[in-house]
Figure (tube, rainbow over the protein chains, first blue to last red):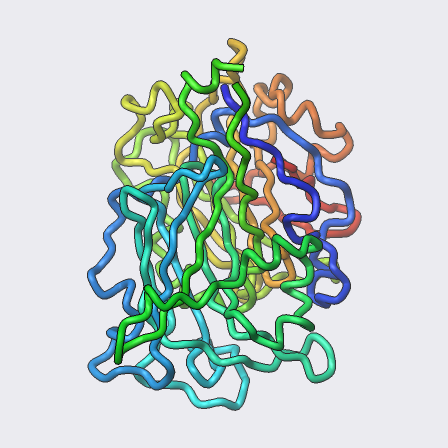
Length: 234
Length: 195
């Protein structure tokens, strides 16, 4: 059975990152125990036939009237470690509204809710691993991690790929956001390149004239799709 | 021939505190085994406890992945997938409630082949996401008292004095109900796995 490649140091956040205060009482204190990849780890939930509605990937069409905010298109490819598109990957996204407020009972930020914006959507990748969402640009918002702390604008992404170890929950950021420089959640990733890969790029070719700005965000999931034939060659 | 250079997997980021309306609004994912699923129907009660000894209220999420009652997965990597129970998906997902608790309805998994001719003990893969966790914590839970635990190759890698942290215990007074506390830190810290 073929194991997944192991994670390269620095390219994922550390559990304990003191700048991110909530990690202090939640990060495990004992070292993790490395285990082999058995059938239990090499399988995983598949979503090839998950019922996705036509409007699930357009967060501006969940109510009769459109939400407030700057309309955006977020699109890209979901790839494996060999650079091959991952088909039938389920993406789930959630985000704050244009004012920086989540539709969640515990979000106490005194910014207005938008009755026309839920802020959650889903999509499935096509045969080449492509996905596309329409939404509005989320606002920045304050949090109580440290004095005058603000999260940069971001969209939460959740992905199911080819197997259990491909599972990923991450956040997409927007290019040029000055709040990224001081954000401890982003900086819990030690590697600069790994941080940069969570920043989308503005893409004029995705932008629809007189309608919406386009941002490209490609995502790489753990796992390789190399065929047994390639595997056998040294 | 040299391999193509590998791409580096995208970094994880915390699920944060406000994922409910995006990920866990559908509580149907707590019912992994409808009535028609084969095997012994069981209830699994998880409680997540942070480093202050407090439950994680509503801001953590558990995902389960397990084999069917015969140890088969509905996934192409399992050569026996065609025979897997079509009424059982193997996947569950719930947020913890105000008391840090979530309850899944499933079936007891069968023994999964180990690849070397042996078989693993019945177990369930657990992935825990939470505010404060930059990447998920992964572990497995096993059934206390199952004779197969003694020959499980993954459990064998866990120091014997910490194996108890991975054992589901029967719930007193409730038939077919099993419970476990996931401790993020402290004396009873759960063993977490690097997979």
